[in-house]
Image 1 (cartoon, rainbow, N blue to C red):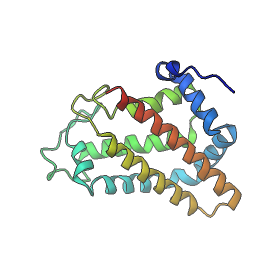
Image 2 (tube, rainbow, N blue to C red):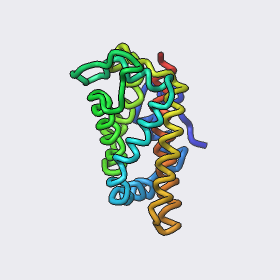
Image 3 (tube, one colour):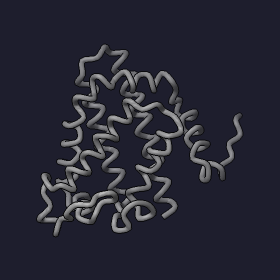
Length: 191
């Protein structure tokens, strides 16, 4: 039986990620499956991003988080929830971030730099990092991750890949999204 330093799981990001990947069985085969999907998924990223934002805008509990100034955004801020439209420049800014995130998942090496990036993705949705006005409740983050997971898996299943490649790709993305979910949740425990 492998011994795990549970206190270190909370203080050492690399140790935490290493433990999670080993426990879930996320390995080089999964990374290869994700990277091999890039040529198929990259052209579909804009549609995935639009689907995510359509969903986010369909509930006041999620749309309201786009009214406050977003971290890194320097343009005009929407006046109210009702005035915020999909074509607002801040939404375009956020869509670009989500698109880059999805592209990074399928192209970046799964190394320390990516692990830190995935951790920051979790942190920026809390007032602990980024915009002090932005505090997305964990229930909204879980809803978002569930929707992204479903949309991504449905997209992969619609690619017409050979069955074994499709299964490996879906399983690999499922693991990555669970890893990301942990790196989101950990910052809510600290809040």
